[in-house]
Image 1 (tube, rainbow, N blue to C red):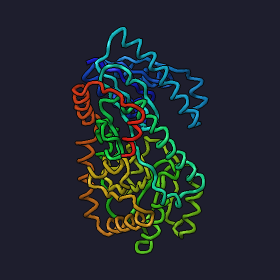
Image 2 (cartoon, rainbow, N blue to C red):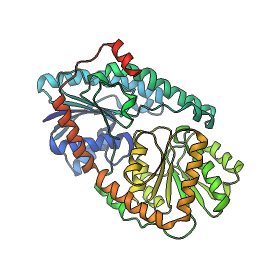
Image 3 (spheres, one colour):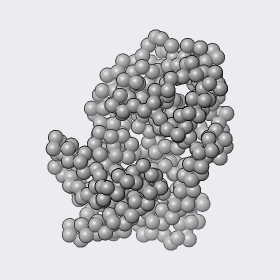
Length: 419
């Protein structure tokens, strides 16, 4: 089968969006002839990887202006504007390629995002859309956030609601299969929706993490890893840890990462009288994450929304207990690997349940060791790129059987989105 892949972000050896793009491309190229539309700034990394490990059934079409991308790279708003314009350009190029040598299926890979559009469903062939997460941050959680965090979450909610509504017409209604990390109830009933968080680890990464010894002895040590913004929910991890210290004063909390909320979290640690047991390690390269995971017992990741959660999977592969909120991909990952999944009902409820779970883990080392085995087994069997590639092949089979749907009128889309 000849497949057209749209992977704006696509680089080998990376996590998040670039890693998703590259992982999908490698799996599709094992089974089909893949033509990949990607942004120009990915060229150097892909060419370097190709020189070492060529993909015989993959060819890349690079679109973009590297200098322009570098200028806007640090600005999210301008970055999404550029992405929108890039999608229009990608459609023009894709039409030309399709006329010259028709494709059997089109697949939008990255960005994995429910409100950032893809226009490549405008061919009379099956179209698969990786749609990311569709959840909004519950309003009651806003009181945990700084003013900056509240503004960011409000803007995201506007984008998911407003642009997401438009994207139902532009993208979702043209998809033979919508692949999302969110529950099906958040999507119109007419759409063919499959709940499947998008991401995985390579065999090399899985093997390296699988060799890490499970930590025994010493004080109970938990960690949160990632960008320190309001949506990551580290404030709830901090409050739960402060409660844990009342009964386990030797416990430690490592916070790995940097971001706009760091100073606020540092002040909070002093206010909660736990600063002497909290260690802010700042940003570290992804290559150093395994050595950090080797030194902790549990990963706390109470994110308010997340498409996948690479650090959650890395912790599972390392044999660490993961404690997450039931939002997007993180909850699905943790459920598959014996992790602790906490519903997002209210801040007080999350903090209380998180504290209870941490207390249980601190008291019961045998429980941690059993959870480590379950997590590693799930990571290896369910979340390697080979396993995800097999599931993707099934999605392609279903999408091909469905064919290309007829887009529903705008009024009907709006009505369905409220159902």
